[in-house]
Image (cartoon, rainbow, N blue to C red; front, side, top):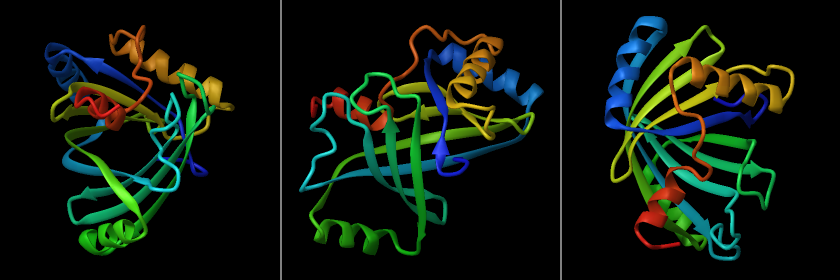
Length: 190
Protein backbone atom coordinates (compact mmCIF):
# COMPACT_ATOMS: atom_id res chain seq x y z
CA UNK A 1 0.00 0.00 0.00
CA UNK A 2 1.49 3.31 -1.03
CA UNK A 3 0.98 6.50 0.93
CA UNK A 4 0.88 9.67 -1.18
CA UNK A 5 1.60 7.40 -4.20
CA UNK A 6 4.99 6.47 -2.69
CA UNK A 7 5.73 2.88 -1.69
CA UNK A 8 8.61 1.96 0.61
CA UNK A 9 9.26 -1.76 1.02
CA UNK A 10 11.93 -4.42 1.27
CA UNK A 11 11.89 -7.99 0.01
CA UNK A 12 14.03 -10.90 1.19
CA UNK A 13 14.33 -14.44 -0.14
CA UNK A 14 13.56 -17.19 2.35
CA UNK A 15 14.15 -20.89 2.60
CA UNK A 16 11.09 -23.09 2.93
CA UNK A 17 11.98 -23.64 6.60
CA UNK A 18 12.20 -19.87 7.24
CA UNK A 19 8.88 -19.33 5.47
CA UNK A 20 7.07 -21.76 7.77
CA UNK A 21 8.85 -20.44 10.88
CA UNK A 22 7.67 -16.94 10.00
CA UNK A 23 4.15 -18.18 9.24
CA UNK A 24 3.91 -19.50 12.81
CA UNK A 25 5.56 -16.44 14.38
CA UNK A 26 3.47 -13.87 12.51
CA UNK A 27 0.23 -15.68 13.36
CA UNK A 28 1.07 -14.99 17.03
CA UNK A 29 2.29 -11.37 16.88
CA UNK A 30 0.18 -9.74 14.15
CA UNK A 31 -3.43 -9.07 13.30
CA UNK A 32 -5.62 -9.49 10.24
CA UNK A 33 -3.97 -12.47 8.61
CA UNK A 34 -5.42 -13.31 5.20
CA UNK A 35 -4.45 -15.53 2.29
CA UNK A 36 -4.88 -14.72 -1.39
CA UNK A 37 -3.80 -15.97 -4.78
CA UNK A 38 -2.38 -13.15 -6.86
CA UNK A 39 -1.65 -13.07 -10.57
CA UNK A 40 0.36 -10.17 -12.01
CA UNK A 41 0.99 -9.94 -15.74
CA UNK A 42 3.79 -7.51 -16.62
CA UNK A 43 3.94 -5.44 -19.81
CA UNK A 44 6.30 -3.11 -21.65
CA UNK A 45 5.54 -0.48 -24.28
CA UNK A 46 7.01 -0.97 -27.76
CA UNK A 47 8.31 2.59 -27.96
CA UNK A 48 10.51 2.30 -24.83
CA UNK A 49 11.28 -1.16 -23.56
CA UNK A 50 11.28 -1.20 -19.76
CA UNK A 51 14.00 -3.87 -19.90
CA UNK A 52 16.50 -1.73 -21.86
CA UNK A 53 18.24 -0.09 -18.88
CA UNK A 54 20.81 -2.19 -17.01
CA UNK A 55 18.65 -1.74 -13.91
CA UNK A 56 15.00 -1.58 -15.06
CA UNK A 57 13.11 0.97 -12.99
CA UNK A 58 9.59 0.83 -14.42
CA UNK A 59 6.92 -1.86 -14.37
CA UNK A 60 3.40 -1.89 -15.74
CA UNK A 61 1.21 -4.75 -14.58
CA UNK A 62 -2.34 -5.98 -14.80
CA UNK A 63 -3.17 -7.56 -11.46
CA UNK A 64 -5.84 -10.04 -10.45
CA UNK A 65 -6.82 -10.06 -6.79
CA UNK A 66 -9.80 -12.38 -6.64
CA UNK A 67 -12.63 -10.44 -8.30
CA UNK A 68 -10.62 -7.20 -8.22
CA UNK A 69 -8.55 -6.16 -11.25
CA UNK A 70 -5.94 -3.39 -11.05
CA UNK A 71 -3.74 -1.68 -13.61
CA UNK A 72 -0.54 -0.84 -11.72
CA UNK A 73 2.43 1.34 -12.71
CA UNK A 74 5.59 1.58 -10.60
CA UNK A 75 8.60 3.80 -11.16
CA UNK A 76 11.52 2.92 -8.89
CA UNK A 77 13.99 5.51 -7.56
CA UNK A 78 16.80 6.36 -7.87
CA UNK A 79 16.98 5.52 -11.57
CA UNK A 80 20.09 3.82 -12.92
CA UNK A 81 21.03 2.33 -9.54
CA UNK A 82 21.20 -1.32 -8.60
CA UNK A 83 19.41 -0.70 -5.29
CA UNK A 84 16.15 1.21 -5.24
CA UNK A 85 14.88 3.04 -2.16
CA UNK A 86 11.23 3.57 -3.06
CA UNK A 87 8.82 3.85 -5.95
CA UNK A 88 6.04 6.01 -7.25
CA UNK A 89 2.98 3.83 -7.55
CA UNK A 90 -0.22 4.48 -9.45
CA UNK A 91 -3.11 2.03 -9.31
CA UNK A 92 -6.32 2.13 -11.30
CA UNK A 93 -9.19 -0.30 -10.75
CA UNK A 94 -10.48 -1.78 -14.00
CA UNK A 95 -13.58 -3.81 -14.70
CA UNK A 96 -12.54 -6.35 -17.33
CA UNK A 97 -9.14 -8.08 -17.44
CA UNK A 98 -9.31 -9.37 -21.00
CA UNK A 99 -10.57 -6.10 -22.49
CA UNK A 100 -7.90 -4.10 -20.61
CA UNK A 101 -5.22 -6.49 -21.87
CA UNK A 102 -6.60 -6.20 -25.39
CA UNK A 103 -6.46 -2.39 -25.17
CA UNK A 104 -2.83 -2.52 -23.97
CA UNK A 105 -1.83 -4.89 -26.77
CA UNK A 106 -3.65 -2.74 -29.37
CA UNK A 107 -1.48 0.18 -28.20
CA UNK A 108 1.69 -1.86 -28.76
CA UNK A 109 2.18 -2.74 -25.12
CA UNK A 110 3.34 -6.34 -25.01
CA UNK A 111 3.22 -8.95 -22.27
CA UNK A 112 6.56 -9.93 -20.72
CA UNK A 113 5.91 -12.39 -17.92
CA UNK A 114 3.23 -13.47 -15.46
CA UNK A 115 3.97 -13.83 -11.75
CA UNK A 116 1.69 -16.18 -9.80
CA UNK A 117 1.91 -16.28 -6.03
CA UNK A 118 0.06 -17.23 -2.89
CA UNK A 119 0.35 -14.37 -0.43
CA UNK A 120 -0.19 -14.39 3.31
CA UNK A 121 -0.79 -10.83 4.53
CA UNK A 122 -0.27 -9.62 8.08
CA UNK A 123 -0.72 -6.23 9.75
CA UNK A 124 1.93 -5.39 12.33
CA UNK A 125 1.03 -2.63 14.79
CA UNK A 126 -0.78 -0.67 12.03
CA UNK A 127 2.65 0.51 10.88
CA UNK A 128 3.69 -2.31 8.54
CA UNK A 129 2.19 -4.85 6.22
CA UNK A 130 4.13 -8.08 6.13
CA UNK A 131 3.67 -10.45 3.21
CA UNK A 132 4.85 -14.04 3.02
CA UNK A 133 4.87 -15.08 -0.61
CA UNK A 134 5.14 -18.49 -2.23
CA UNK A 135 5.96 -17.58 -5.83
CA UNK A 136 5.61 -20.11 -8.66
CA UNK A 137 9.03 -20.98 -10.13
CA UNK A 138 10.88 -18.70 -7.66
CA UNK A 139 10.32 -19.91 -4.09
CA UNK A 140 9.56 -18.15 -0.81
CA UNK A 141 9.90 -14.50 0.16
CA UNK A 142 9.04 -11.98 2.84
CA UNK A 143 8.08 -8.47 1.86
CA UNK A 144 7.68 -5.74 4.46
CA UNK A 145 5.98 -2.50 3.47
CA UNK A 146 5.56 0.68 5.48
CA UNK A 147 2.00 1.83 6.05
CA UNK A 148 3.10 5.28 7.17
CA UNK A 149 5.84 7.81 6.64
CA UNK A 150 8.47 7.64 9.38
CA UNK A 151 9.88 11.07 8.46
CA UNK A 152 11.94 10.26 5.37
CA UNK A 153 12.43 7.44 2.90
CA UNK A 154 15.78 6.61 4.48
CA UNK A 155 14.31 6.45 8.01
CA UNK A 156 11.38 4.38 6.75
CA UNK A 157 13.73 1.89 5.06
CA UNK A 158 15.74 1.68 8.30
CA UNK A 159 12.54 0.76 10.18
CA UNK A 160 11.78 -1.96 7.62
CA UNK A 161 15.21 -3.53 8.03
CA UNK A 162 14.97 -3.29 11.83
CA UNK A 163 11.66 -5.18 11.78
CA UNK A 164 13.10 -7.82 9.43
CA UNK A 165 15.98 -8.37 11.87
CA UNK A 166 13.55 -8.60 14.80
CA UNK A 167 11.74 -11.33 12.88
CA UNK A 168 15.01 -13.24 12.51
CA UNK A 169 15.48 -12.60 8.79
CA UNK A 170 18.87 -12.37 7.11
CA UNK A 171 18.94 -8.79 5.77
CA UNK A 172 22.37 -9.05 4.14
CA UNK A 173 21.02 -9.66 0.63
CA UNK A 174 17.69 -7.94 -0.01
CA UNK A 175 16.04 -8.53 -3.36
CA UNK A 176 16.90 -5.57 -5.57
CA UNK A 177 14.83 -6.30 -8.66
CA UNK A 178 11.45 -7.82 -7.81
CA UNK A 179 9.56 -10.89 -8.97
CA UNK A 180 9.15 -9.99 -12.65
CA UNK A 181 12.88 -9.38 -13.07
CA UNK A 182 13.79 -12.58 -11.21
CA UNK A 183 11.38 -14.63 -13.32
CA UNK A 184 12.55 -13.07 -16.60
CA UNK A 185 16.17 -13.77 -15.60
CA UNK A 186 15.38 -17.37 -14.63
CA UNK A 187 13.70 -17.90 -18.01
CA UNK A 188 16.76 -16.43 -19.79
CA UNK A 189 14.79 -13.50 -21.19
CA UNK A 190 17.16 -10.85 -19.79
